[in-house]
Image (cartoon, rainbow over all chains, first blue to last red; front, side, top):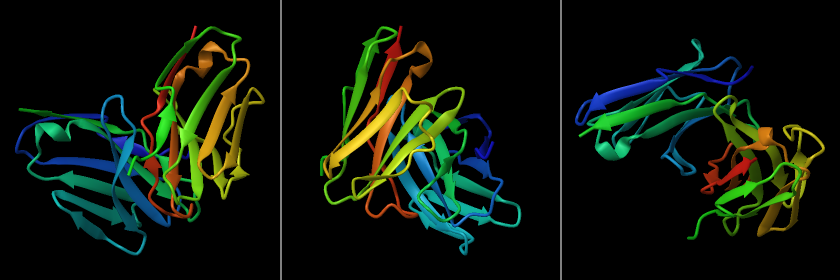
Amino acid sequence: SQQGEEDPQALSIQEGENATMNCSYKTSINNLQWYRQNSGRGLVHLILIRSNEREKHSGRLRVTLDTSKKSSSLLITASRAADTASYFCAYTSGTYKYIFGTGTRLKVLA
Amino acid sequence: DAGVIQSPRHEVTEMGQEVTLRCKPISGHNSLFWYRQTMMRGLELLIYFNNNVPIDDSGMPEDRFSAKMPNASFSTLKIQPSEPRDSAVYFCASSLQGGDETQYFGPGTRLLVL
């Protein structure tokens, strides 16, 4: 399967702590995106990182990409209860076809 | 902006019945995607339209599934006849150009086939 693998599958932290989730993939990529999915809702785009970029920031989010290891990580700093959701990576080799990871379920305890 | 609109939000039907899911993409977006999400298989691309034309339907499970996009503001995904294994959440997403662009997802249709 080309499906991206994410770890951990589930993560539970206290409010204010940082949350790190990882995504590994198997093919060369053009770019990689991270999405958030709240329970019962659609996916919401968080951040896109291109294959020639190594790190990107957006507010409390920090994404890194290591193409040599075929992996990416998403760091959420100073987490809040509202960050509770599932997080998915999605990557493409250059066309429209994104392969989505298996997701990390994050629970932030108030 | 209204975002991507899907209807119905929930659908319960009996095996053998026809099911039609509807999607209105974001105005001005020329690419539309249908996805299916299950616990076992995660999120899978079923079909991709660009400028109302189906470009890639390789993800459509079988002939029971069909999708149309008669105009830029409307698409349907039809399952006929439906089977219990079709139970899943079906998402529609749209993007501006369909390349490696951000996709905007609708809220999904939760389908249960009894």
